[in-house]
Length: 174
Image (tube, rainbow, N blue to C red; front, side, top):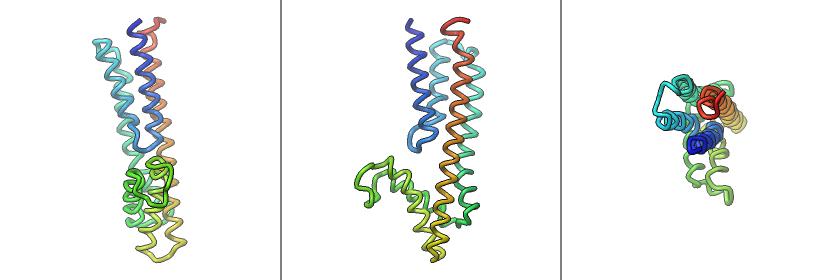
């Protein structure tokens, strides 16, 4: 009975990890990997989690790559310069810490979404002095990042499915 409770708590932890793979500033795939490791400790056998451990570790590495590449590809497709990319990063930080004065409500979660857009547009405008180009660059960076986050969410779901598929019989039998 106690093992089943721990199992369901770890599944809940993994669901938070799936959400975190899509929403910035919440732990994502790393949280799922931690849950897999905890299950190995609970079962006192890492052989019992070999497949989900390997799959989740690979997905974590892929997610990191997607995170870096998605915004970059979106920026390149939109014609953004390095200034736009740096501005998006600075905007993300300012938005996350709630420092954007234009956001009277919503705090960090809203700031995470609008900060990179505003940061990219402002930095790109400073660089090229063309508002249309700056807006296009900002939107490209944000679209690339959002698509990357959705892909990370799909990868996180895949790792949780592998975990459940391989560990369900350990808990509930065949």
